[in-house]
Length: 312
Image 1 (spheres, rainbow, N blue to C red):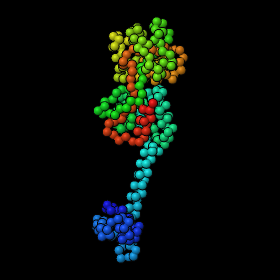
Image 2: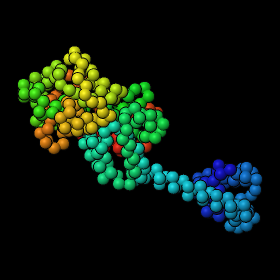
Image 3: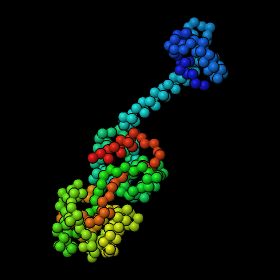
Image 4: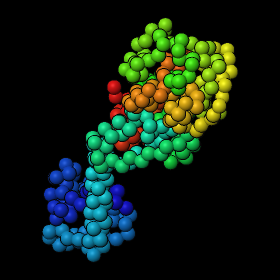
């Protein structure tokens, strides 16, 4: 049923088989045969052929009403698709471990909402492992992470690059002999990637410094351990934290040195409580990715947010 509804509807609008055939650019006998086949499949006549002009049977009235409802639904879906294509509506759910403290991500979220105010943006702050689980369960559309997820299961796109800094309480004695390595506030931003190797501090100088690290399983902790292995020493661990900014704040209170992304601190006011160094290590440079499950449908809202995140 409704397989030939455009032909049925044209006959209804034209009130004539011959006029409908002319408008549809088909022969009248062919049109009559298609209408007859539709009536046979429906099990009742649609048109009263003895009247002039052609009129509808009681069943035909309901049949036409059904066709008009189908057309209305099709128009609604076309309008919805057009809205989504132009990002006039939609929902995108994102997750990450430092959404609120990372300067770049909140700035891009704000820009996205300004450009697409009618798109609903849902943000969840959790560890990368938790975000990955939510991504797998379909609770998140996108995850922003420094941990390189498996490319066989996930699509990942580089958003930006960051450099890990070593933040050392300014009153620690180790700073006295390392002034040539200390970073200015300007050097903690994009300039960090332009510094020559001789401005990068070897971590072996900090072998006796107390450290505040993140818990095992965190990707930042793994990067730190690789840097310590490069320099052939085990750090003096005084505290373990769940989040980078918490470790950073305890470092500001003088409890130990902490590793922190330059992206997280480049816009923080400098109160003089910390001295910053760029570690001499290939593990200090990391990419941030925006990831989604491979093979899933990418909505217009997702695509718009991805484009906003990867812009320079």
